[in-house]
Length: 222
Image (tube, rainbow, N blue to C red; front, side):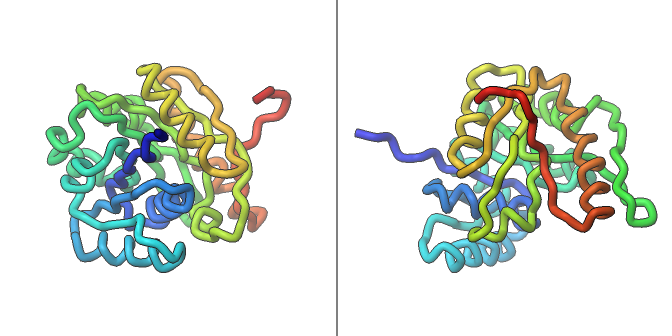
């Protein structure tokens, strides 16, 4: 008997990236729980996903309840709110896999810039704050606009960092469930800052060329 797909929780999942990822994973058959500081906002986002897919795979809860309901937790909050958000979630997240898609950015004159953070990267800071969690870093470079357009096929590579081998493999397996995305092992969590900083570079390219480009490595065999 095939095991049911794991439930995925999205902390801060009412933003464009969080909603887009939740939408794609619900489309792939995963139950998803949108988390927010406001249960009402979370439920509204979940309702939008269910309407788009014509099903009932998405639900909305406050962040702690979303983490507790999930097998794997995604962190998709703005970096500025990460520390305060995680401060209330250590017990709820426990030793679950925590997939960080957080990229510390600033926008000066409309230009995206990577922000150097004290802990080396948002992912490393999350790991330090939640020592029991098994943190990976991934999904930074997917266009929120493309994620939301379910009739638009995604393509490209998702670079995945992590120190826990099982957590990294589980994250890479999730990538493979989204059609046309390829997971790439990008090393330990020490490399997460490079994924986060690359986000600013890609956003800048997209702004100049008026596209929604991502990452695709050539010469790499699947």
